[in-house]
Image 1: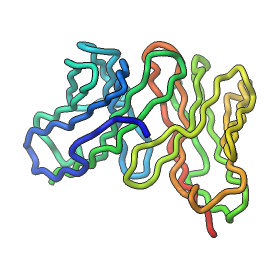
Image 2: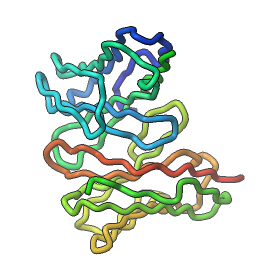
Image 3: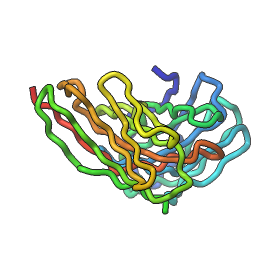
Image 4: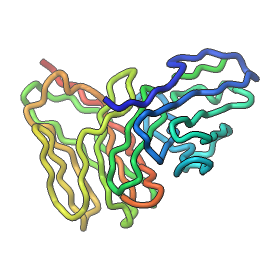
Length: 113
Length: 113
């Protein structure tokens, strides 16, 4: 089982609140990713990082932001949550070598009321 | 060019039968094709992956068949078991660079006992 941790597992929050979803991995992986997934549906890449101080937008536009100050930590922040942000957020990481597997955390299920 | 199309959306197979899920991709630059298995409340987990230099890869009851000219690949689950009931995602990416996986729409597989 991959060592990638996401907290919280579930979050219910009101509109307009600022939230940070935490993601940490203990495998020393350079590359980290955030995917957004509606339950049982396709995964969409919203952010990725090559390494420390490197962040890029993914293929799906998102109002969230990310930071990568430490190799093992890749938090995602929403400055002002809205009901349209309700979804599951999955963090993942991998080694840089070609074809290395992508390891996922168990996700944070966010509900904005 | 970034799409990966997966079918069927849902599949019901009797215990002991063969489950077959198909995917097609458009981007000829893709050279890494994994399959992920996801159980409710969990993140996706890598099941098996293939590179385009081979036409088939087998791991236990799971086999990937790859057709480069048709830009298609499929997952076969032999002797399907109730414990295989999950959602399956195909994906594709370049093996180098950002290695951003593009996921198919998912197949919800149910194995009836």
